[in-house]
Amino acid sequence: MAKIAIKIKSTGQIIEVESGKLKFSVGDWILVETRECKEVAIVVDSEKLKDGRPEEESDDIEVEIIRKLNEKDTEQNRQFKKMAQGLIPECQKKIESHNLPMELMDAELSFDEKKLTFYFSAEGRVDFRSLVSDLASTFNKLIRLQQVGSRDEARFIGGCGRCGQVICCRRFLKGDLDSVTLEMAQIQGLATMGSNRITGCCGKLMCCLSYELEEYKESAKDLPKLGETIKTEKGMGIVISQNVLAKKVLVEIEDGTKLEVQCSKLQ
Image (cartoon, rainbow, N blue to C red; front, side, top):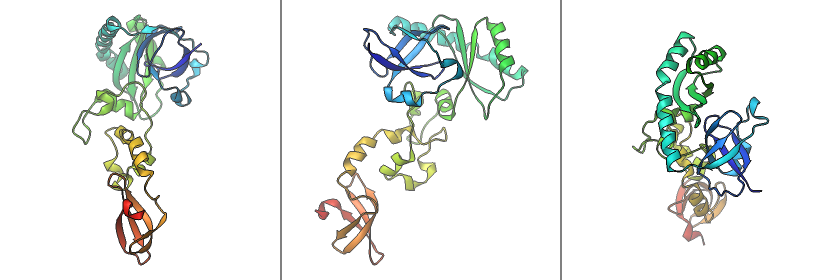
């Protein structure tokens, strides 16, 4: 039986489940049922299974796919979102009364209204057990407090990137945010610009570093590698940088001078 990888929105868990006769594509929003409630999940690339964030209570998690979200489900989910956000002020009061170092970000209500999830950021671990009991008594629902990282925090708050557009994670990125590495910046010749030029609002490397990565990799195949010794019209030299889009490399000649070379002239 076919299996797919999904990310449960309220918990961040990435798990593998049987899809039965239903067919899904990466990025599809679906309705699932767990032992706790009915809630929304998103289909993700199976490669993300190795990066899933296991939790102590998820060792024997049971999830059944109900269906792909239809228009009615999507609208209903929007209504539940509004209801949950309307409960944020009361939750904030409870946080303050318990004197906890937490910054409340967002809230969501499960599809059957059984579970209420509050998202928060904090510098370290927070003992919120008494707060959970208080919230459960106040709202008469299963309460989950989900701590988020800096990238998720930026997605909740929003803002503008250095491109002048609303940040991608707020505007159109769905599901799990892919990891971005310094190697991606190096391949595109951006690593030498300084960390402040390739860092987003969240303080992490910008998500857009991954957008054109494959095109850069393909274009770079025809270029001499960094550190490679090549022959130029002015003698032998070592490649010290690449201009992938222009198909040029900067070469340091044996006498210490630098020369930009069009790669077509190296043939």
